[in-house]
Length: 333
Ligand code: NAL
Image (tube, rainbow, N blue to C red; front, side, top):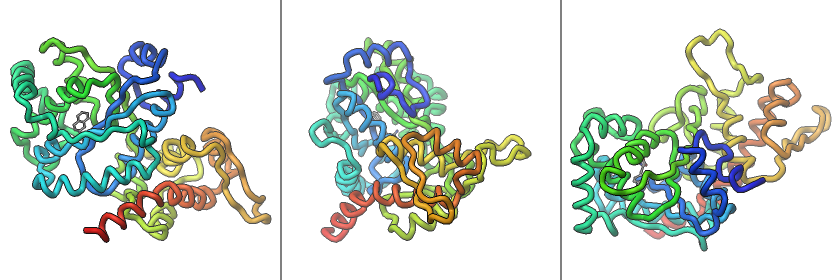
């Protein structure tokens, strides 16, 4: 796999493609960054961007993980003390998930976001940006029903962070795209370059295949889940035996979350995936790429129940180290 392919595999888009290709020419020592509002427990959305960070590290990138404590505060996620405590737990879980410790730097937003120079740049960006643009950028990120002034400042700080952390590539889920586009459009107005951005897909709710999986609604997977929780959730997941689940299901784009998790979480981390089956049902199936597994499910050669059994086993193995860290953190507290 060449560097560009590794950098962009499973990504929904790189903005722009030519900028991405330029980075891929010599990725060694380049810096990618991603930010998270600390929440304590890693869920499957965090794990999806983390898998992309692992790809980037394998391609030669250094990674900065921004523990966005001030952003979490501005988005009404608690007091600074509460946010800080959950951030420390998150850090341990990221490393347990497989980020390369040598190539990962964790930074708290509050380490630099109160500096005079930063605050002055922030005010300059506030002058550059209309309130409605800031509000639109936050549509898929903000919590609560009403928009606070803090939530309009939030995307501007996210844009500025890209400058202050001196990164070559900003990574995030597709829900971050409007913030990144705002950054690309407004940063030149304060004399800074537009950042190159890479966006990962959103995964459908496990139980319905509709919408995006999030910690707040629908069924999600997190590092808090026991092996039994994972088995139950995966077993109950929406997984029709064909890739076009319901042709009459007009207007509702239902995805197959079981296949999505194989594609975005399992295959990037395993060279071969084995679906165990008793001999009377044909014996074990071995796959080296996602497409063959999906094709078998489509063709009826792989039963959804067998696919789910294998998925639960692999997912459990992926989260086990992070789950152990979480237990340590909670028993220390
Ligand atoms: C992500 C977040 C906050 C600040 C950032 C700064 C730079 C790059 C990424 C960042 C958190 C993100 C979320 N908006 O929704 O969790």
